[in-house]
Image (cartoon, rainbow over all chains, first blue to last red; front, top):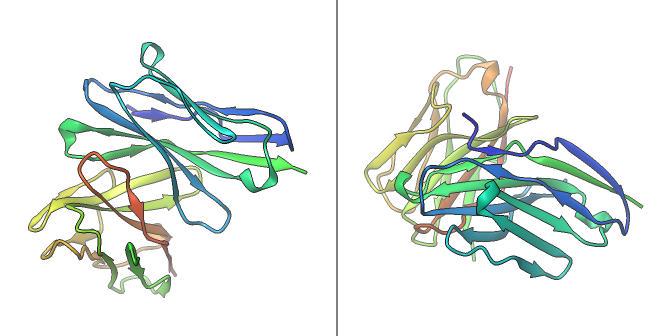
Length: 115
Length: 111
C-alpha cells in the first residue's frame, strides 16, 4: 500500500494566487516524521520542512505554511501569493522510527505558476 | 561544505555493461540511501544502509548492488545494465530521524 499519497499530479495557478498541495500518509507507528521537498526545474532536491508526529502545530515560513492533522493523516502545504519561482515538483515524505529512518516518498505534485 | 557528492553526473551505457555510481558524504551520517526517479513514479528506494557494514534492500533492488565499507561512501553498482535502468539516480544521507540530504543526481541512459 502506498504510504504517502499525493493525489494532485499537476496544478497550475496564476501568479499571486494561493495554492495548497495535499499529502496523505499511512503509518502504524506512533513516532514518525514528515517532510516536504522541492525539486525545481534544475533537478536538485531541496529540503523545506520536517515535522515529528508529536508536534501538530502548524508552521509558517514566509509565504509557505504547513498544516499537520493527525486525525486525517494529512500534512498539507500552502503557498501564499505564489510566484513563478515556486514552479517545481513538490514531494511529501514519511519516515518511520521503527524502520531505521527509511523514507517513503509520494509521487510528487508538479506546480506551474503562470505569470 | 561538500555535503553529498555523486559521480558521474551523466553516463551512457550499452545493455549488458556494468558501472558504479559513486556517492560520498562528509557529514558523518550513519544513514545513506539510493533512489531512482522516473517520470510519474516519484522517488523509489533502491538500497539503503544504516551504518558501515550494514545494507538492506528498498522497494526496487533488482539489478543493483551496494556495499558500505566506510561511513562516508555508499557506491551503487549496476551489474548488467538494462534499458529499464535508464533513470535519474539520487544518493542521500541523513542523521537519525533527520532530513535527507541529497546529491545532485546522476542521469543514466542505457541503450
